[in-house]
Image (cartoon, rainbow, N blue to C red; front, side, top):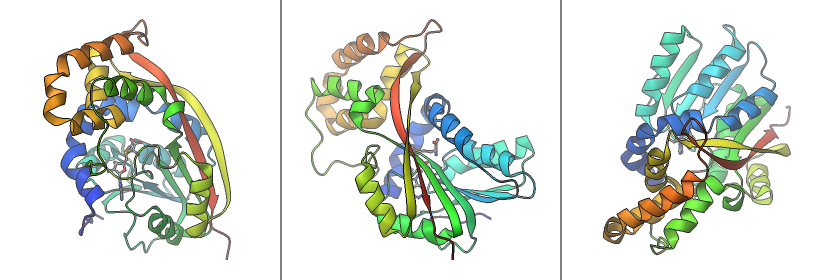
Length: 290
Ligand SMILES: C[S@@+](CC[C@H](N)C(=O)[O-])C[C@H]1O[C@@H](n2cnc3c(N)ncnc32)[C@H](O)[C@@H]1O
């Protein structure tokens, strides 16, 4: 069942070359700390026993495993991601859990030639980074059976997500904003915050009956202040400002780390972890029945 992404676009290459290592370092935050949104989204999602489900941009595969339990032995789940190293963890966890109805595939969802047809396509934060969002929507639409459903979770605006917005504001007090040619992982975490834009993309992809449900809740962004500071300077909008500023950022690292530590300490819980506010959309769209 293993296939690999062949011709990589620049964003897929950025995920593999730059982000895999950083994501591995902060897995406790990215997989566990942000899971409030999929806990709410998946709880509300009707998943039929025996269904065939695709998890798009599945990362380490924890939501694919949750879905595999929900569909049961008569169902099947595919976890698809453009980074093979993430999928290795998914495969290990599936084996440990005794789940043989989940498969992990390394591929770019924009171009993967799906032959299987799914009842449900799901994604937690895996749909915001495409080189061509409409091409991706069309391909996901093709992967669904007539009458099938797409449900995906994306971040709302940066103003609705202080866990990313506040550190970015702070870092910008010390460093210049990234230039137009900054290396990125694609359109970015807020690229699907606008319901009008996403509705247009989905409709261009062939979807109908599109709804947006808002999910507001806490995210754990560090087991302690030190990890939260390191996380903010490595990943996300503050991390992008820091990375793109190069030597200037390194020169000012000490003062930026200390200011961030003060800012983030205000969100510390009694167990030491840093918990901040966040907001996402759970978006549902349908492929019309034939
Ligand atoms: C923010 S992570 C979310 C991962 C996982 N769903 C989670 O919530 O932990 C985004 C994921 O999308 C994957 N991704 C980005 N662009 C992709 C593409 N074109 N095709 C497949 N996966 C992609 C990345 O490799 C990454 O694992």
